[in-house]
Image (cartoon, rainbow, N blue to C red; front, side, top):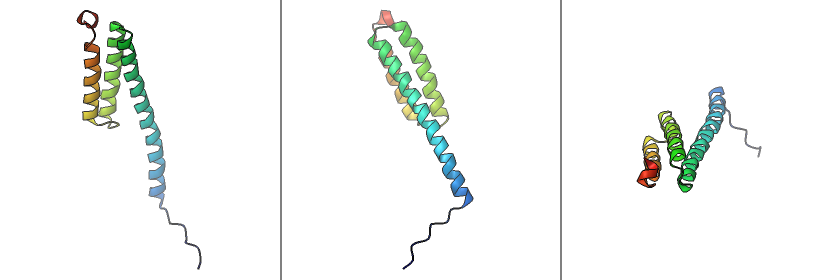
Length: 98
């Protein structure tokens, strides 16, 4: 019995595979950046640095919203992450957070 022939691949399938590979790498980079932003906020809160925490939170919220707008993460996921980070920063002593 002869070996199976390789499946035919159309030009559009090959192009879609290339595009998918590129978008996957781009999305992964954005998600890693979001994790870094989140870790920076948590680090500032752990160090009791209120000013640094607010600055890091602003940067994180901006990045999360941008990722949700472009569809990299779901909008509810973005909302949940922003809410948790904001609560974390606000949980610092009121004199420090204000």
